[in-house]
Image 1 (cartoon, rainbow, N blue to C red):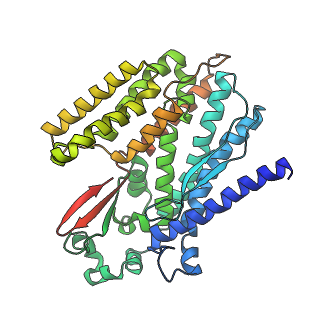
Image 2: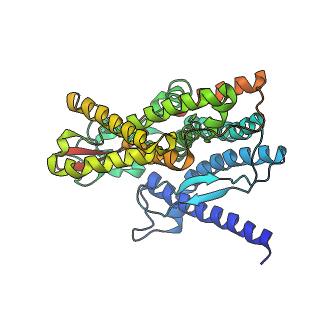
Image 3: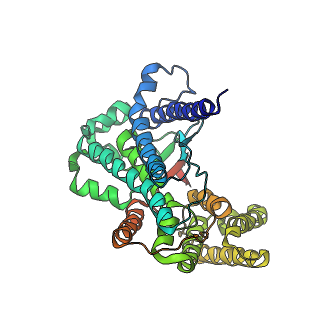
Amino acid sequence: MNPKFKTALIHTSLFIVTFITTTLAGAEWTHGKSVLATGFTWQDFYSGLPYSICFLSILTAHEFGHYFTAIYYRVRTSLPYYIPLPPLPLMFGTLGALIRLKQRVNSTRENFDIGIAGPLAGFVVAMGFLFYGFTHLPPPEYIFSIHPEYEQFGLEYANFVYEPGFLPEGSLNVYIGKNLLFLFFEKFVADPARIPNIHEIIHYPFLFAGFLSLIFTSINLFPIGQLDGGHVLYGLVGHAWHKRIATIIFIAFLFYAGLGFVHPKDGMDVLVYKIPLFIGFLYMAMRGLGVSNRDTWMYALALFAIQYLIVTFFPSVHGYSGWLLFAFIIGRFVGIQHPPSEIEEPLNQTRIILGWIALAILILCFAPNPLELVEIVGSSEIQNS
């Protein structure tokens, strides 16, 4: 088989599979139509298209922003590799996409430009979809087509249906943690009478897919290692300051993600194995700090001790354990430090402004608790990040 044809086949196949899995995920999130349930139809599949088209358009703009900038600088690169996720419950259909640079980028300026192009392109497309979604909200009664059981309460349903006594045991109550951009759109763009309840945003495909895209954008813009934000920070402040700032931000991120994950209320029978496992996890995540094994263990123990003391004296304080996986991937595989460029050159004024705009976009897109799932157990709720 011709190597070029084989490569094109791989990229095309991954995109098609990802398109299918995101469409299936969209059908489940927006209309509760799972492909794993009996009676799933083509009409149910089509209902997931707004979600998948929005999500993949933003993702594609992001990756081709990197791709075309690399081509401009004559850096050999692959086409995007899309990463599908199986159509399991509560999955988003994809873990994103990535391109693979086939040669080293030598200069600070080229690294900066390739790094920043992706999130800026994706952000612009996301703004377009979110603007459309917020200016074309359906009437409030739309939610009754998804949840006909709400209709008995009329438009005052929010005062009744989210109580543990109404939802059946074992069901999930979904919360969206809004970011600053969502709050802006709600206040200045959308019709206030049509803004969906915070529990129901998952049923509005352009809003939900746009929200998820913003979260992925914020993760990519973390000024750590060789993430897009890491390239941006490196170009702005140089190697020495990047190392200091990235280390502080990573430790703070890991601290927040794990805060409350191990809690005294877990009980001694659980803590006896949960504590050493979590300390081991912190050690593995902090290997990217680039210090000795002894120092890494020391940092992991110190971080855990502070987390545990805080939740002991302030039991209601907690972080967001959903970030732990991302912290582990960053610390263990992406790395926290940025390798020095062969050609160090200062950025011009335009690039400096764009760099600070990109870091401002991180703040606008980031949500400390982006998605929380609360399981209904009898007359109470159990929170799962």
